[in-house]
Length: 487
Image (cartoon, rainbow, N blue to C red; front, top):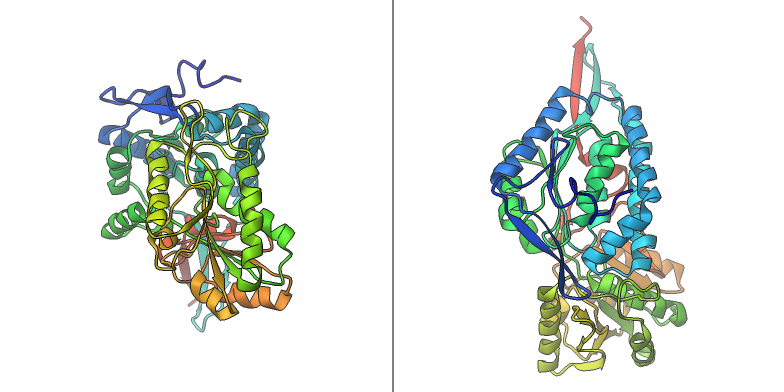
């Protein structure tokens, strides 16, 4: 096993056509350790020529058929090997993800690495299930359908879950027989580069997976606009996603867009408050609040509103915040200075609007890193930007409601619709409310229960299309109909 620091040929360079190479113009960009604010390393910064080389390598690999020509069962065997290698190298992959993103090492192991391995294992099992069907028609003909790959997929992923969100795209794309050009986030490229070498060792043919690191405005834009790309799979902010969807629309390319979120977490008076509090805290501090399916808006039935606020005021300051390398840490740093400043600006706005800061509300000075104390805010009006917009940090706003209808109206009042949660002891209410919430996934009496078999995705400004499940696999295929005359 090699590490990022000791491999002289791989990580830090672009991975194109099975070869490690520098950017054509020699450009490089810094990767920062968010727990200390110091430079970890540099990686190649791809330009349009590098992106073109990567797309051409992917196209050649697709057209020549060393992957799309495999049977689904053969592709499944290779993807199973990818999952095995992720588990075998879990320590190193978790270390890289923790260094790069600032994730607590314990969570990087238990959540990121585990889920990534599960992704490839799940789609390995589904790879040989792609088939067509015969269709009964009044025609004097045999009509049947075939389902095949699209071609070259551009996978563009964000900074908050680099390993998982890459796997949620690359695994189903490969299972369906596509080739991929992966552009990871500017700030967090390390696990993507490590995985490139791992794919090669698992038996993925050269050119089938290519990785181009660099900036969004240069490498990302070149990949979006490249005529050789057949599908765009994007996760990121709604603003950038809107642009990506517009470019895809201009070129009539299919897209999957998993965008911003601002989920509501509803606590009814019949909920088990002890269990609910654990889910509420988990929902807004997990991954330092940098979680598009996090629960930053807490809506509480008025009879238990004051009680729940009191419990949160006592419990939240006790959540362990600190060095992500320590196994006891639950909340690490923000991913970068600009993300930290964004959170500070929203909390300052809340203060200006007369909100009550129940706890937190300030930076945590620690080792020069980008830390922010988990923060609970009360007494904001629903039209506040702090409630209506995506803060994307460890900040929870708390609002009371007086009826089920009001709770649902408040929950649905933002432009987003990615996730939602309900805490209740009433089974009928759980189903009734879940049905009315405008969200791609709803959790009952827990938060962030995710599995590759369960699809997720957004409505409204949270995007369209689905990741995970057989739905994701189908989105990386196209259907062809064949009609054979029997005259």
